[in-house]
Length: 169
Image (cartoon, rainbow, N blue to C red; front, top):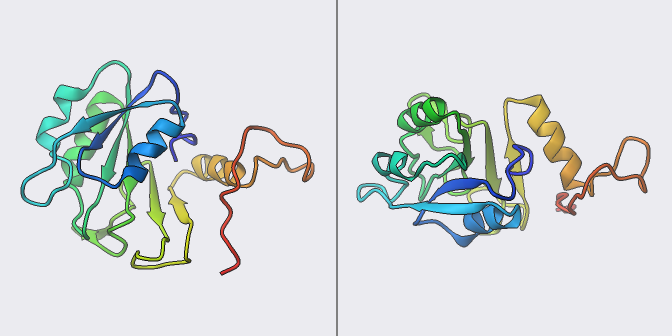
């Protein structure tokens, strides 16, 4: 998701301090810097009232991590992202099927992720999903997940990709 958005070295991504390390590791993997924001005492999600004080010119995105089935305050997050021209990434690993108003978690951001690890609501043993309403972002993510194999053949690669395909299970 981060690579599809073009986030990398020198960029900052705002992330809640209370999350599983995978969210932060993803930011580190692409060379960006995680910027931590305190949790809200009500639902333990990111405290949206403390985000703007952490935004700098290097900030490129906010990663909203929906915890324990509770969806972050999406309407406020979207306003902050629009005001500061930031991407909104949803980590929806713990909120599959949860709603904010009449919409499902994972449908609000520019791009969202879902874990399919064994302890999640829906599992495939390992792996996950990346979702977006942007065909361009999905095309980039699809390319990267399969070693960036080009349309011209198995041994022609157009980028540094990963082996992030789903297992046969």
